[in-house]
Length: 91
Image 1 (cartoon, rainbow, N blue to C red):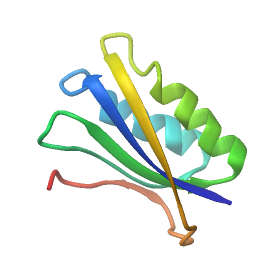
Image 2: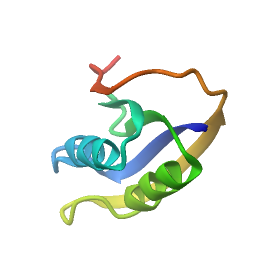
Image 3: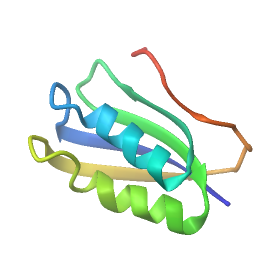
């Protein structure tokens, strides 16, 4: 299992990016959470197989057609065994 934090910068809010990432992660069978942050980025933490995680990172570089991704920062984390995939409110 691999667990990562992904932060996406660019024109990603207001274009359904968070929901697109949620749908993609769910389709991949990953677990974790995703949220919009007040600084205009989208942040997600996910846990899954290496293939699931790599597929979501690849998707993050593109996202919905209306998005413009400037950068995708990926940080590896220790696995926790979370269950399900949820959205979280902005902090």
